[in-house]
Image (cartoon, rainbow over all chains, first blue to last red; front, side, top):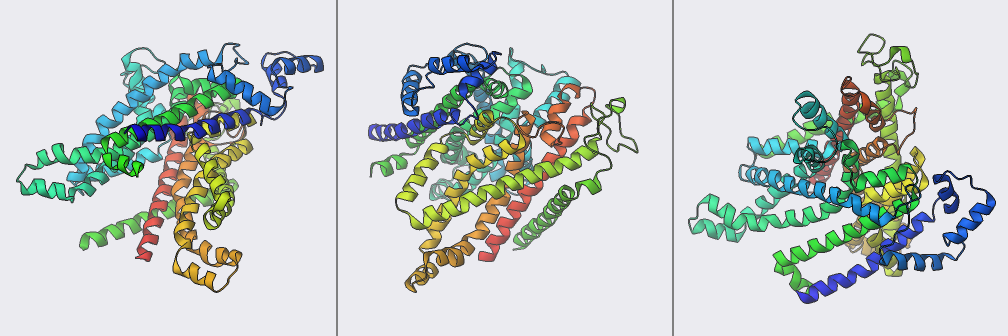
Length: 312
Length: 276
């Protein structure tokens, strides 16, 4: 296990390096001069002298690779620069907005497991019956539904018409319900079907036959033997979805005015706050990679066969 | 046995319905000026937020524009953009994927490392960041989406080529001394093209969703153009009093995406059946 962790960690280094390189290059793709963009964002007319002075101040006069090394040195010390718009540290702003997004994502994960687990298993056991058909339709609609529209439908029917939940913002537990439902909806459909497929696949495995031969009750077979093995794809899938949920959160947070990373990101794009765009992308990229690493580790912990293959 | 036949029939029925919807929507997009009863961008404040009438079959929005006409023109924007994005992506992905898969070597190695890095980002976020750098707008949206998603398709196509190139008909062509270019065009491309088509149609619904999402965030087509995601964004302030403003564009997105997804699935099943 130790060797496997070391191996996975070392494979992370080139990826992280690549992420930093892409984020750095991205900022230099900006049409026009970053110094001019900075002045525009601060409402200072970009005269030639001020631009030249600022270029020196921001280090834009140095060769690109020097800029990259200096920038990377700062990033390692968690200094992502200053926002053009609010003039605050990008890292501080990200930290401020990160927790609400984590909260939203975790709540959605819990929702996904709680809803898709029972329905997925039931639709495998009662294959072709009503519940299976029902879950098939839900799955189809959920992947085709635009999240922002679903969010508005929920707001309209549950908040405005029935007054069950608060419309916007963050605060109490009730505020969390609609956004996490919106975020998790697409995944609930997918995982329901995924779980169904994996249960169906395992139903014909020898270990199930053996359990049946021993005369175990069907319920025991499912809960003791089948569930454990069928959960594996759900674990990997969920972990991989974490990163995509971060991106899905961009839209959901905009709909519900949830003060998270997604909103920060969209606002920085609309105000052309380049250091903030860069910082958010870098941060979310790293989070995504770390999530995938954790999933790999969890998977190899749950399924020892992966570990052996890695050591070969 | 009977169940199997029923399943096939059902899938054919779905295939029929979904391809009819896809066909109809494409027609709507192509002939938008014929179908739209009014000018979609004509602002008329005196008729704002009206209910359905004979002149405005689905009512008007907050600027007095005809909703039905905007929905119809929105088909054009959404489908046109989605097909353009997919087409451009394939123009990059197919040659690159074939090159990497067929030639191998250091080009393939470099390609795979680029994939590793670009796929380390959640793709929607990377598109967002690119639009942030390039600036909002339809052209930049298309550019951003293509630049981000070509990697994924190129990698899948590379995988397809890898499995095809070891098959006997390719080896036979090689033994005959056929040039590489001819092998690629005459043998490899026809062998993978149906799989690629399935891939495109399975995913085009997702592209429509992503485009409408980006437009909803205000990063896609700019006013006064009509796009479903943007229409929903516009209706945000009024949806308590005029919920239909938000309802119609969402329905359109849902119908189109469901139809394309069904169509893609049916296409995949049909092609699988033929192989058996």
